[in-house]
Length: 271
Image (tube, rainbow, N blue to C red; front, side, top):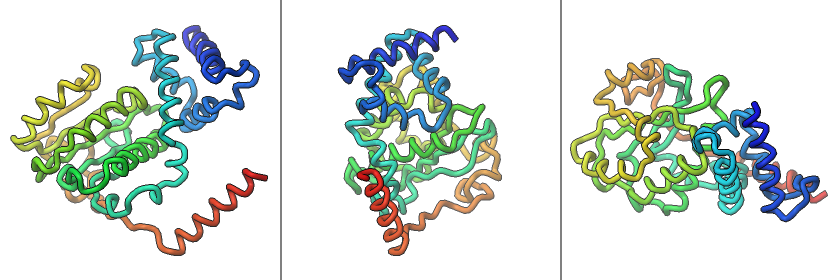
């Protein structure tokens, strides 16, 4: 408790310094807004503990990483992306099924499935794929329910070819996990990896923090996968009971309704 108390005091002072505002006025700073939206999904102390643990309880290091995260969220426009939702992405890319959320593993963690064969390097602009990844991370955070604090990612490498390998995006994802969403990953399952992937893994593994690398499990097939995720929660493509992912985009009426809601919200904000 004493460490948390000192952390919050140090963070408030740091925000005051970064925003050049007195402590009693930091409520008006962009850092305050970004912090509010970043923490909004979970208990603030749980959120703070993620940074403290990843920094081995060094308060000043944890605060500086938090400030870096707030700057990134502001510069990257994370909250605007969340507000836009899928309309800020490429519907065609979502339809590929390369990335979707479905069910929970045996530890109660929400699952993010990545289908490698459905990602072709260069098919869509990198910045749009990055937005899809960030929005997925933000959505995952909403799906986590106490006492669970992490999620699971399943990389399904069935049908993987070298055209599916995207080192640029892998680096982007690792940077997200290690610097902006620390301690969010509880387990990473690499499923059905073909022999050609292991050459790629030799490169990728060198980019990973040892802590993150320890959370990765190579699973040979769906039988082994069932040890981690009950078949009742798996999609049919992985011999599960759930329907396979199919994205149904918004209709013209849906888009019109969303535009009206946003215009109304903007009008109220100006008023």
